[in-house]
Length: 137
Image (cartoon, rainbow, N blue to C red; front, top):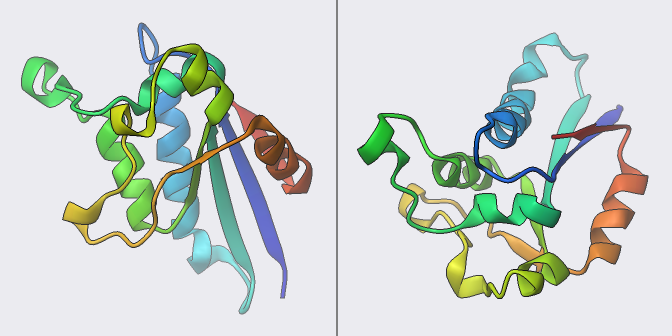
């Protein structure tokens, strides 16, 4: 039984780029590979928002309303529904003057049990050291 650990590090802001949403799309889709795995093998995914990337986590995004596109907020909530480990760097939130009240923390309306974890950068560094594949977005 083998577990492949994927790490998605989102460091770009949500403006003028699809990269942050693409990272979440890849993390979500990584959970559908079980049909290609040997019995007992797993793929896990951790997602961390750092630097300007923490701005992707702001609540009440209106992209569907204004542009007809799914929001990064809905992708974060879908990630939580799939029990992905989603982390936000505490130091970067503070740098922008943001708190947990300003960002997506859960997906209760979807029935998700997982919540976003606001963690120090040292915990994100540990995650980066523990994964088999680290992807930067």
